[in-house]
Length: 381
Image: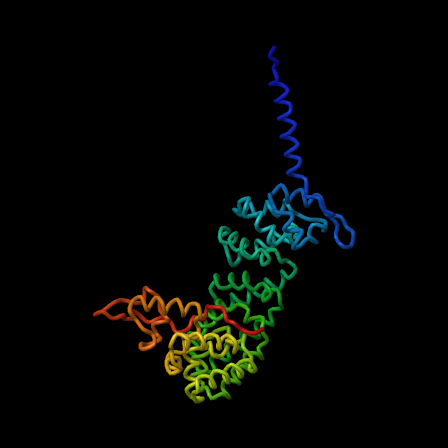
């Protein structure tokens, strides 16, 4: 005799589904209390779960946030959603910077209006928040931020430059405006004293700040000390301007002691005169900022490939390339029939697209920049 089990199966299935939903919402078993014994804010935890935020990741990195009250999870999500952000992006922002939920709705709205003064398109602003959430949700220095925005706009800098500065170096906008004024004034004064054209100073300053926003966090004395050191090493005023224009804001990442050691090592290794060393520095600023251990590795890699010190002296820019890149490019050039041991090392500074075969020989199609000031520097901190 057959029995109808369908009603029972439906009941069991319904109960299992409800059980699974409850299990998914249940936080992993763990003692949810901070060292002080305060329990987690369960309202915050549940709200983050509803947004598909990885709670475990927050517990591991910034668990203290989950113990704070009040927290504004739903309000933060609503703000981002209203600006055009979608669910996955909201979850990523809250995982990366959970402190955002501690900003009150009033603070968040004030930040939104502040940022819109330099980034009016909210779609662009959402992209900035996704990459730099701490910059947007840092609201404790609102007055300083406003004053610094007004200052940089008074310099007639491009809004995109001001936005990039505030996003990538928020500390410089949180500090008193007088600090930034002093550094900018020092940079402008150095540029003019070295013979820079006043008509081009705004463009020069924009490039400098966009390529290294952290220059604003350095004391002006660093710039002065570095320029004085280089002047004492025999660089002329025009050469200092040329070098400053190549290094841009990265000149403040250097210091006299590190430059002294690096230059001494390079001169001894290359066996060149002071004048020859200055010429090489002008073409290859890497000789100022790479520590000895990195330069030693690159010299060794080039010599192992059959390159001579005389060739390196003629084309010092090859020292800006890692040993791995040099090795790969030498092999690539060899496949074209080009031997760096007998040819110019300038070929190593190019890529496949820069070469063409002419009469059975490899020819450099176009010149490449000798120095890329945007590339991050390897500096001993």
